[in-house]
Image (cartoon, rainbow, N blue to C red; front, top):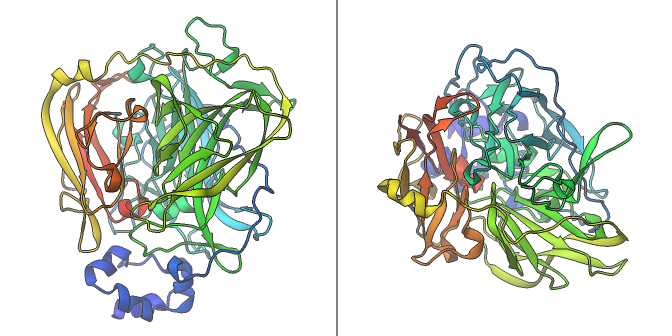
Length: 581
């Protein structure tokens, strides 16, 4: 109990630091969860236990226009390195790095991004809050990458070491979620850099070779530091990373190339010289909670999964978007820590889904609704052509969730998250072809390569979250697949809990869900898949790439896979595999 009493005396900014880091896992393992609460001071309880807070202050919906994050701007090339210096993680381990300078291709685009605290308005009825953001924005700048043109991003950690808000730790690792990158650039959770340091990440953006497996679409980047990812992402450290190629091109609907799909979207240059993407809109959905004074609150010890009671899109509470009578492409990302959503349109109109996670589907799929779990992406086309001027249409979440472990079920009428206001006409040269991207290396081609089948059970043990009965241990390799091969993994979840499982490095195909063929929206390549509760278990086909091409090198090294309910991840519901030569 001396540790707990000492903890009570610390300031909010010191509650999660110290020589003996006291985490929610420590409390659970010690069996002190109930008694610990009584010993903690009221200021600590207010910031750490969301379920002890009253509801967030009232906010009127649809008074803020949807913000769109600016595009990341390239800078002049600089000498790059992989080693930022010594950094001690919250669990007491010392971060490890690839040391020394390295060489990147001459056509690499360079970027400089600062992680920093900055004021942010979530809603006019709430006071300005201090978020942590990439370049001080939440969400951070959106990267537009072109296949065949690598990116080198230097992230500078300018986060405060004595933060009065008490949510997050100024220790960083950046993961480009859904990306194909070297292990040293993948955001391994122990490969961190501290306040005052910087870290360079190289993203190959593999060659524009018209091969489906090499061409990505909607990725995102976020903090991935061991044990503190949930707090840091909740505080604001996340953004979009969009990939384009000759088929799904950056010129979009205006591309006259023979291979171009001409999906909705185009680049527009403002008189200032700045550019933005029109009719192609990234949407990140999050839920947050605010205390009685309107300041951001977070339950640090909620190991089941944090749920907020305010719904945000692109960093603001329930915004509106003015749209023209034409087709739009929306890139939907569930950026919540634990909440699942199922979206409908209020007028009963269907969505046309064109992509899931980081890849286009082979064919468009028309659906009345789509469900999206933490870290998943779904890209949809909404056609406003046949609407009337002045019409209002709402994007509605009808999936209720009162427990971070799983959603409850569909309700009606649900919660209106985003309002579309039809206010003008506009030309529309875009199209949605019947074939988007043919799969040339799918299950039929990959199954003959399979030599191994593995089972991973995502389960609850003594109030905590484990894989095959074990917490993540950086010294234990859970699988050793071979490069240029393929494996079958069975992902299971007992106890009725939902786990969105994310596998780094590669995308997989779902062979079956509960023994049946996957539904239409799960037939493309995926990097995150939901298991458990009403979703059941899945069997996936996991291909292992042979080589990196932008900088020629065989694929090898350590990569992690984990639950992307981020509180489960921070409880070390994570394992790792090491690709063998």
